[in-house]
Image 1: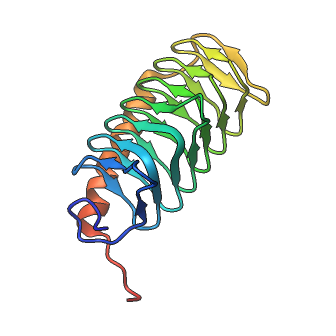
Image 2: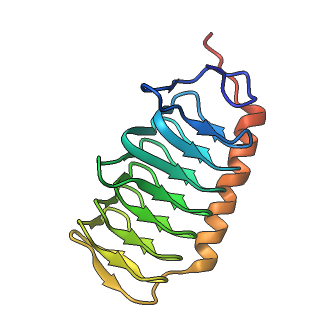
Length: 182
């Protein structure tokens, strides 16, 4: 299947009746894998090695959100994985059956698990693990394994700047990336 307007082949798969829906302005790197019931919003970016597997449930990525290198997004039969607008999902993050609200940052190598909710403008620090059924308040920082919540410690301006940098990066890659070995 052709990538969204970029003329690049990438692994995008239907699974039974479930087919991905990718906004034409989104950037999906050719080495990302998108399977099944996955929706990717406008100006979002999915980077090399990321796997979004909507087999048991739905995965929704909002607008202007980056899913960075080697992330794994999955669901459970009962719990969808929802990521809002203007989010930064760092390298090697695992999201499964959780909700990430608008304007959040999930740091590199963090995990957010079943039925947990990261509310608007919150941060999950790098290498942190948010276990099942955890509610992280707006503007809080969750840090550690298991994550400890520190109220009012997130930096909304930093999150917004990081989100915009990936919107810009997605546009650049869509325009300039070219494979040299074949």
